[in-house]
Length: 92
Image (cartoon, rainbow, N blue to C red):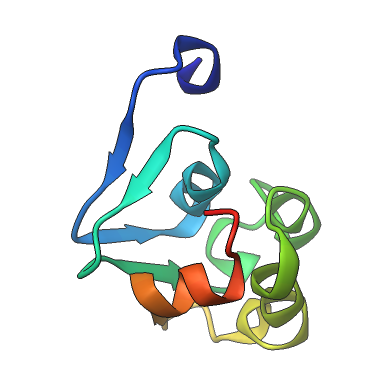
């Protein structure tokens, strides 16, 4: 719906878990001080799952998620600064 709407989507402060999918919208703007968080799908067993999540990610963000961040214990969140996120996915 947000993609079809076409208006600006702003991510401020903190974006984690399945909400990370919003970072790949063509109309997204991520605040420079925002944090993006990744965790294992063990938190939501049977819900989104790592393969499902990975299909929304791009570039080096996807590579990092598949290689490392999807294995973060389900009680932890791996945080990435907005600046580092954009460096890993310049399309953002």
